[in-house]
Length: 264
Length: 355
Image 1: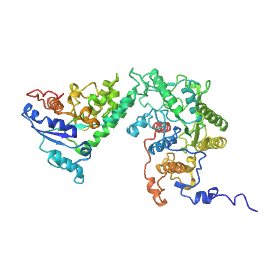
Image 2: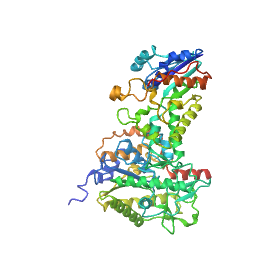
Image 3: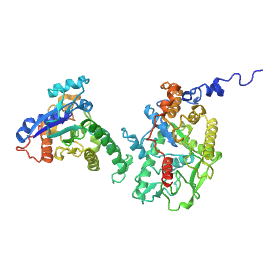
């Protein structure tokens, strides 16, 4: 079966695990096509091919660099695993961090918002985002989406790469309720357009809204690179984990070998 | 002999001040009494038209106080459906100065409104003072009060920071609990009802009552902040319906006239109170109705822009030049801003569903 892993820079972690994927899922023929998030979001389908528009010089350059081609023809693939969309994560986590939910017991000095309002705001934001993706990809039942991973847990430490919303959210008793609400909104909106959804696997998370630091890309911490710290992108071990989750849940396949140990 | 009119500027004469001017940019109509800058901490409140004022200030990045609304740009229509992004706090439309004073007194615990929770026909509960902010209603009266108390805390925070309150007067007609004087923005039975609706009756305030309420509002502001300033406007939006027994047209004229007269007189007699003539911009006869939508009530985006451009220009902010008159017709095809939410529209919708 031919499978395409398509997505933003976050799909690179799957590509990094390509050798393991080949061994663990010998029945699959997996190809990869990744673009930087901004380029990905402005890229288009032209017929059956997806990629940056010819006028997007930077996008074309990046596509050539990352993929060895400008576009990818989607027609040969039986399934498409789309990785790395953020689904308005910044706005939604910001909202979650700023409010108490009226119907929940937790109270801080934050304003309260009813569940009804929270669901409507989050649901509409996510829906509009997915509608935008549907405008590009159209009706295509081959698509399964997994969002970008939550930031690494180390991003909760103040300093370079500080992830304020994630840090505030993970301290809250209601984090898992918020998470369910958000992921439910993504799942239902994707289903509205005929797409499937798998959330970030629980075992890759630290708390609810953070990714375990063992999935950090090598040499990206403050100690390694100072201000250029990367608390968003993940390593090959993470790519293996999410591809395994995809293969098991969507293709009914279990890996023939266990995923490699995460890099510490 | 020279007449007193001989030395007056063009703006003092109808022909030069109105007929010769573009309705979108009438010169000299608004001469501010005091400066308002992008850094002035502004609180917005009032009747429907105040939503336009709030939004325009926000869009131009003026220092509009906003502690209760989501920081990110969620969909405007959804925000408005839940009362977010309309004003500096989530109090919904405040149609009268009395309601505004009552709200502030409640926030600072000087007053406890009677029957704060009303029940809808479907069994859900609403906040009687902001009946449209939760379209799904609340499951229990306790949730209503929990939400309200939290809102009042945010309101106190907002008001403590306020240097300027821009308040849009909307109506003289109100619904009042006879024994306590508590006023409500909607009549019993429109969206919900209190347990004893017969205790609430129609009241149509006159000039003296409005003046007293404005005085109370200004006094309260000054008591919290000696530098408090007030900018009054009158909503140009006609009444959706009147309970006065009169035809809605003279009822509208009465309401707007009383409010306009009171606002003008009050501003004239207070150095820290000014009047912003958005009402005059929108209702200018020279605009030939161009500033009203087809329903003859809602203000078009061109009308809003004309009024707000006048505000911004008067306070030193560059604005786009008005479109030539030949383009005005095309601009009116614009269906305005659908997100503006108004309890009056709900009333209108309900009336339609009944006919």
